[in-house]
Image 1 (cartoon, one colour):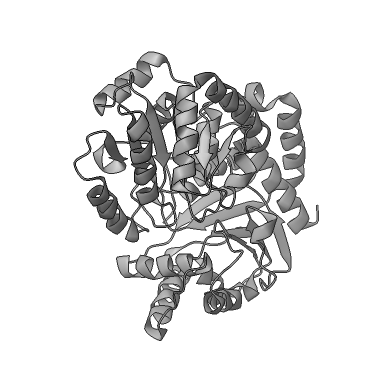
Image 2 (tube, rainbow, N blue to C red):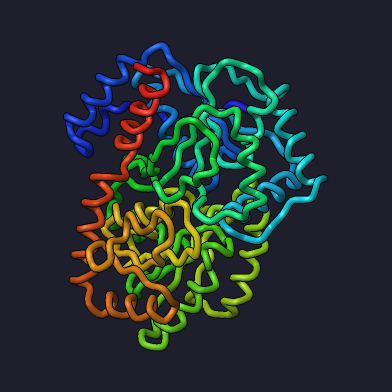
Length: 411
């Protein structure tokens, strides 16, 4: 299925954010690549970081003359349960697939490759494990690239072997960080490209105070009380239970504090419903814990308002590919308290843009300190905004992509 209805984006609209020099550099390199084309393939048109990235990247690549299409595979709930197992195993969980599960995974990819998708551009960029096996069923001369959004530093060995076999037909693979590039991955070329936020989309654009208060009021969040926010899937790796336990320790010292747990419930993550229910049960009857999802009308604009209203953002992920929610919070000058997982370490510089913690108790202490010392929080937030502007906005992402294309095409 081709994703349509994407927003209009023009790289020139980012001059006031990225600067003329960066925009002109992108346009100059793009001139060398005109005539080439790309198809991105992933598993969902909404929900989660990959869809969010493509929502901005695809129209921006088109705006600089590189024809870009976004295709989404069609699959059953059972398929996504299997791919969630693959995801978890690649992040280190002791999970194996049965022969029947492997066969269903391959069958769904085969049907998509042969009947559902139109993959006839110069480069096919496949995101994450769900569509990885497409290449196995297509004998063509296109260039195939796997974009891995997962922490692959300590995978379960049997699952790594399974995906490595599927990657043998790929020309290149892309990772968020150098440490994720496992030596057993067989692609001839490997690139490191961190993800990005789009400063002009509804999730990150500037909001007035009245806009923020109106959204908070709609969901009965009190702007006059301290707010802690975590934006993350309901997933054991994101540790929503730990977030609730942290809040409870903070509440012992600051009784009127509020915790906002925000997530997009995506159809390619059936496990999310299980962990949402677990988190709700763990929260009990506490009216100052809010579960804010797309199921009740929380979209990008609402997430924007909640992150801007927050005194502190937390990201207590045990494993994390990158953690775009951290970049989003820092862009809004909100300090972040987080575990040093994966790409979070690139964003939360301890004592400069936030605090890195290793336990619930340590997280609570840092949050209490920030709530009692708002000037420190503002300084950390200012530093965080500068760091994101320099390294993790969409123009930087586009620049990295086109440099990769030059490499693949020997331009």
